[in-house]
Image (tube, rainbow, N blue to C red; front, side, top):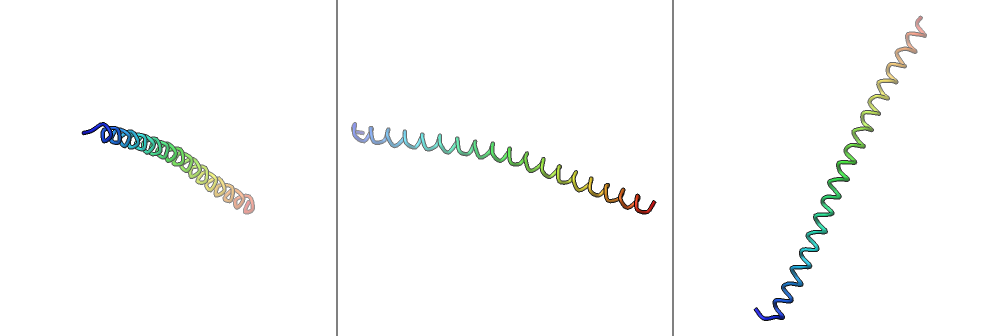
Length: 68
C-alpha cells in the first residue's frame, strides 16, 4: 500500500471512529433520558392513581355525611 492510500485509509478510519463514538454517546444519552422519562411517568401515574383514590374516598365521605 503506498503512502497516499495509507493516509487516506487512516483518515477514513479516524472519521469512522469519531462517528462511532458520537453514536455511542447518543445511544447512552437516549438510554439515560428513557430511564428518567420512565421514572417520571411512573411517579405521575402513582400520583394520579392516589389522587383518584383520594377523590373516591372523599366522595364516599360526602355521601355518608349527606345520608347521616
